[in-house]
Amino acid sequence: MEILKNPGNKILVVQTAFLGDAILTLPMIQKLKEQDNNSTIDVVCIPASKEIFQLSAYVNEIIVIDKKGRDKFLFSFLKFAKEIRARKYDKIYSPHRSFRTSLLIIQSGVKETYGFSNSSLAHVYKYLVEYESNHHEVQRNLDLIGYDYSENNWKILPEIKSTEISETKVNEFLKRNKVSANIAAIAPGSIWNTKRYPLEYYEEIMKYLFSLGLTVIIIGGNEEKEVGKSLELKYKGNIISAAGNLSITDSITLLKKSQILISNDSAPTHLGICADIPVLTIYCSTVPDFGFYPYNMKSRWLSYSDLDCKPCGIHGFIECPLKHFQCGYKLDPDLAISTIKEILNA
Image 1 (cartoon, rainbow, N blue to C red):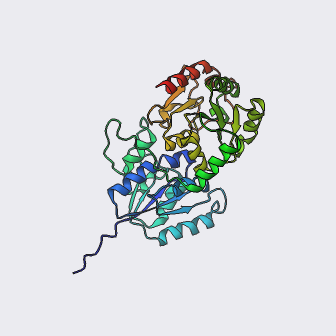
Image 2: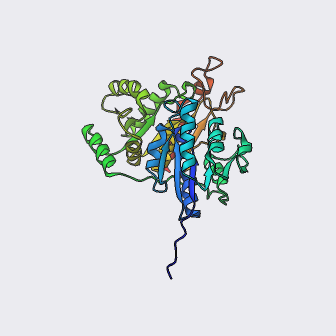
Image 3: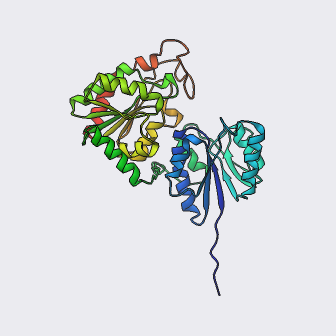
């Protein structure tokens, strides 16, 4: 008699937030697959985070919702929701908590849905999980799937597939710029200006890294291209800018070849986690208590917290609401340098 294999559940994960949030969803997806090995896991995400899910061996299919483009309007959104409904998922897990996501859950036709207690329209979810604001985002996402962790065993690294194409591209980039080893990566950018550590302070850090014989490589997107190029010209031979020239995959490949990453509270912090290298994250207007700090071995963070106005917002602002930006200027670069020294000597 033929024994039929259990087909497993057809699962959808909805994560349409920023790139960093997407990366911190990967440990949850990895454990979800471990809990139900025969399952297939699809992901709904935005265009900017598609690449990170493509790098996961645990994701079956990626469904992109362009909520700022083609799916922005009601008719196109309802068409997208209809397509999700037609896929007949058994379960939906939604780390994302927005109103739009809850509308998608309503339209999905799926009965077994999991969301956080602070989700918009939380009542649409069949199972609500308490959102623990004092936990790391990885922990919160593991809570969503009922993963039993204790102490530090929640510190699960995102597993990323490497590619030969990316390895070749990065090696060619390093060869072209005559960089053989001893790399320190710096990510000075952020969507939000109040998350950006003052550039003149970063320059002090860079000078220290030069003194150690390290070549500084600037990473980031197109937004950091101009500042990267200006630093490259100013410190010719000591700084190479890769900003705007490397994909997410390429950036992770480059970071794996680096001794350290210094970053603002932004997506590159989490790319450093993917590469599993020491990361120093510098917090200006935000705080580590929001749950997005680097958690792998040797990584650290710095924050000047003796301010009544900090944190001034969850994400940050285009400019300091009080016009002084003391959360950035009060954080002395000498403290960052001494922390880097400790990390590199550990």
